[in-house]
Length: 110
Length: 113
Image 1 (tube, rainbow over the protein chains, first blue to last red):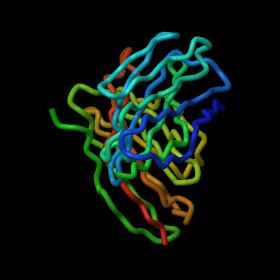
Image 2 (image 1 turned 90 degrees about the horizontal axis):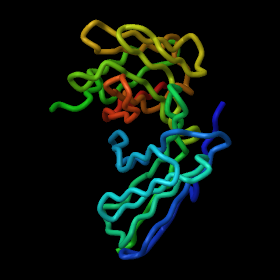
Image 3 (image 1 turned 90 degrees about the vertical axis):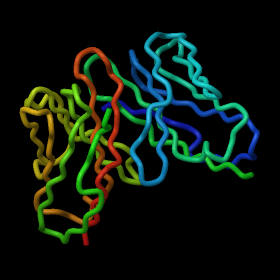
Image 4 (image 1 turned 45 degrees about the vertical axis):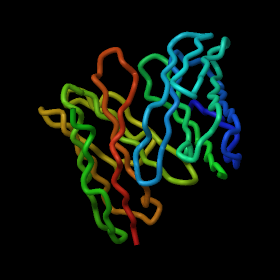
């Protein structure tokens, strides 16, 4: 089946630093999504991308749909303590179910 | 607008028992998907239901089953529980036409002893 490689697996950063994480796929997707999961909760959608090359921002978050349609990245600028959590990428091809990366666990040191 | 509601939030079962989890979607969402989340495997797709019909199925044994009712509420059942079934079971819903974005519930955390 389709595999998503998400990296890094975990990050420890200082408050105020920028963060970058990415996902790569062995196959082409037509949708990339980024979710964040807080402890004890389900994932919450951060950004949705639908077109190759698309760059979309949501506040301090910016995500891009790679030109090859096999990758995506998420940047967080000027991190704050509430950015702590697990970030997941998810991709979809056609009407197949969303495939999720294994997540990037972000820790912010004040 | 109420979100996706999953019940129960926490439950403990023993090996060999069976369990039923429930999911009430956002009003107007006709597609319900179920995912299993474990630390080692991440989020793994179980199945998707739309208009009471299973539309997609993941690579799980037949002990895992689901159904959807006419009001779009969905249940999943796991029979003959094994220790490895301990996980967070997430339900996610969407309108079902066009939009790919899933809205997740808070999950049902199952512990099998």
